[in-house]
Image (tube, rainbow, N blue to C red; front, top):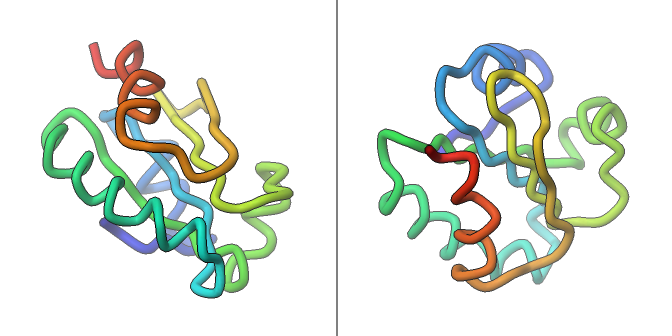
Length: 105
């Protein structure tokens, strides 16, 4: 999984030809650490159809503000350069998978 910055976000997310799941997180966030292995599993499971990237909100506050990130973890789903869905909080793999399914076709 790539760790994005404000400088790399547009190229990796907005211009991506794949569905992108963006994990807004911080190292001090317990729920963020809980969801990380789930995202790693999903990255392997949907390899080739889904790109999963991470944005550290402490290091990229402008990006967090631009997308209205008020709580972490926040997962945003992008398809064809636009945000199509979101989840706030740490969810189990089946819940995240069901949110992703419509965007992976």
